[in-house]
Amino acid sequence: MAEIGDWGAEEAVRAETSHASTRPRLSFLDVILQLWRAKWLMMLVGIPIFALGILAALQMPKTFASSSGLYVRAGDEIKIVSSLPDSNRDMTPDTDMIIQGELELLRSQIVAERTLSRFPLRRVYPDLAKARDKALVSHAASDAEAIEFEYFQKSVEAFGKNFWASASPNNPVIDVAYKNKDPETAAEVLNATMAAYLNYRAELFGARPVDKLTAQRRKTETALLTSEDAIREFLRTNRIGDFNNERSTAQGLYSVISGELSGVRSRASAIDGQVSKTRSQLASTNPLQDMFVEDSSDQTLLNLQVEREQLLSRYTEDSRAVQNIDRQIAQVEAYLSGQDGPKGLVRTGPNPTYQALEASLNTFEADAESLAGQRVELEQQLAQIDAKLKRFTGLEPEWNKLQRDRDLLESSVRTLAQRAQQRGAINDITGEDAESVTIIEPARVPLKGKSLRMPVAILSLLFAGFTALIVGLLRVFTRRGFASKGPLQRTTGLAVLGSIGRQ
Image (cartoon, rainbow, N blue to C red; front, side):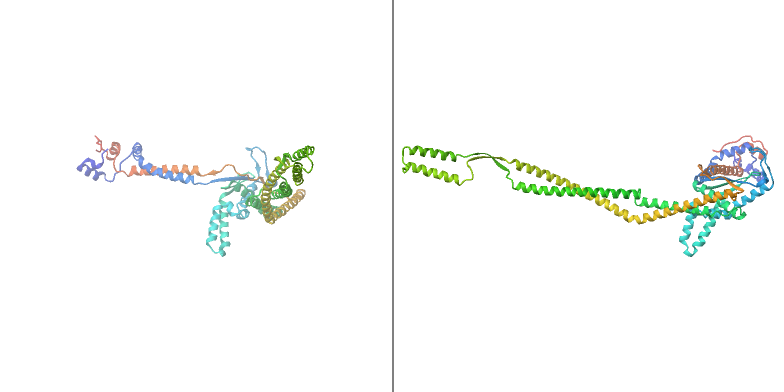
């Protein structure tokens, strides 16, 4: 529709003079129409707010709440008519007063302080622990005690926000719960809170003396766990699985390898002696021997003697022919007498004795080389095991100390447990352990955590929508123009004959 400025100069002056202070009169449908036309402005305002809300929701941490219950007995004043859940119970008015008193004790600061004193601040509230450490570093050492006290009080204040206890009217059960980012911490802190409450209550009312024996036992068990952690850290740091077994195994291997090395050295010494002896025999043995000897000296001598006998049948001994034969015979005899044996054509071959000695020598040398390799390998293994045994020897004092500490703590825990059992038996007999407040069940580790992500996301959506709606309504009611002829007719009281749109 047209604005007032589109009516012409005369009509605009008349409209401004007669209806200057009058705003457009809008119906519900007109408001809806104007809001629809301002949808982009509303989205421009609402979407960033919703996105920031979603971002804040994603940053919300998840917490785990552990819960338990305390049953309060008020003696003969409480009379339970029926055990059905929807049954009425005939209870005196003093019961609610007793429950309220127990709630005040549970919520007291001394119970919170005693509970938190059992845990390191870093485990329950790590953010406060980091802030405390920074403060300790940035301040002087003289301010350390004041800083510790300040942050302990802050942890007590945080504990009060995360712990709650409540009870329904005419119900002897007090519901207690505690939430923390760590589920195991939530359960342990809640159990410690109920124990601190019972001890504090016992101190106030004198129902029974403070169980220092149980406290000492828990302290000793904590020290035992710390000692076992130190032993595991010692083994992990030194890469040892089982100290005693590995040391015994190393000692056994050292004995076995030492025996094998001694045997190898003995065999190597015997082999070396056999090699030397065989080499000596081989040096004195001819590698060849005579296989066949052909010598004609004896036959020549015999032929000469036969020929001399034949000549004697015709000549005398003084004849020249006989004397020539005698000279030849004498020369052959002189030759034969100057030789060790028959000489002539000799056939030689390999000496079997020499070959056997040579084969034995090769075998002995191969055995000696094999034994030398075994000796080197065994010496290396023996050196490694010896270094390992020396390492165990160096670690043994620390290991023995850790073992002694652990054994002493185990002995202390057993002694304290026996004393606690004896005291419990005595209390059962004398009836001194009767209590008017009983823990229904110990706190358990919660399996599911809760977070404010969904509520924050929903609230951010509602706030974004509300803000966008407010902006849209401001846009609608601060606009001086007319969206349709209806508001114009209602505002001016005149009939609208026509309208033209903007070009």
